[in-house]
Image (tube, rainbow, N blue to C red; front, side):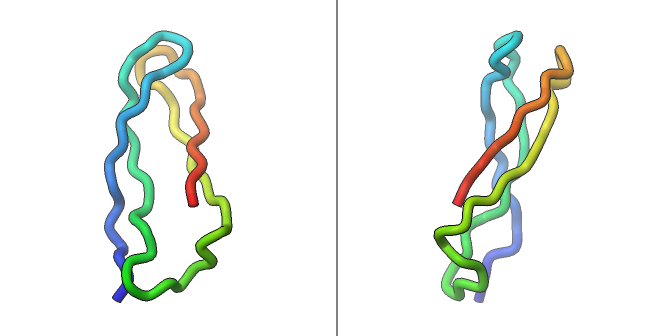
Length: 58
């Protein structure tokens, strides 16, 4: 069974140091339906200053 829920992650904005909370997909779980070595990513923006952030993960 694969995991489908998202995990919440907090990072600091490099422009204004505000904490930015974003969701990233959970790992593949027990059944690997995606290639484990494929780099994926998501975008979010700081709610304080509008700086765009890109998050990359496997």
